[in-house]
Amino acid sequence: MRAAAVLDAIAAAPPPRPLDASLLDAVRDLAASSRYGNAFLPVIERRLSRRVSLAELIALGRAGVVAINRPTRDYALRPLDPPRAGAAPPLDHLVRERFDWLTPSGDDLLRALVEEQAQQGEVRLGDRGGRLTIEVLIASRPGATF
Image (cartoon, rainbow, N blue to C red; front, side, top):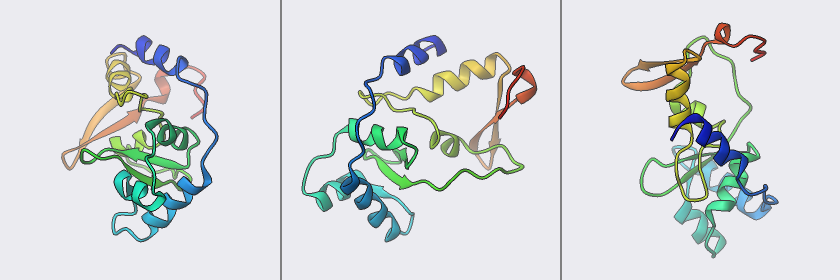
């Protein structure tokens, strides 16, 4: 998927849903008791005694209150703290936490966008311990403020 298609998909996304406070509370409670600081979707659904739609997960991600990852076949949600600046380029999964990467059908919008930006010299992909890093090359973006 090319960057233009990614941006079109983002623009065509349904409007944000109101946040479900009980869902967010369940994510926070389960993550607080998790060794890894996250809550897997099946566990959240058991806690709430109902199915949770992908649209609900996307709404939480878009609101910036959770990171959505998929380390296994199930989605994992982790409550987000405010971002911190660091000297090293961030790992892919840390960038992904701040990006609206998941479509309602479950497709990944970030990867294609990042790869195209790397080809254009806007970002540099790297490696730290076998894990992908994404560094924004601010000098390549006139007027960039981030």
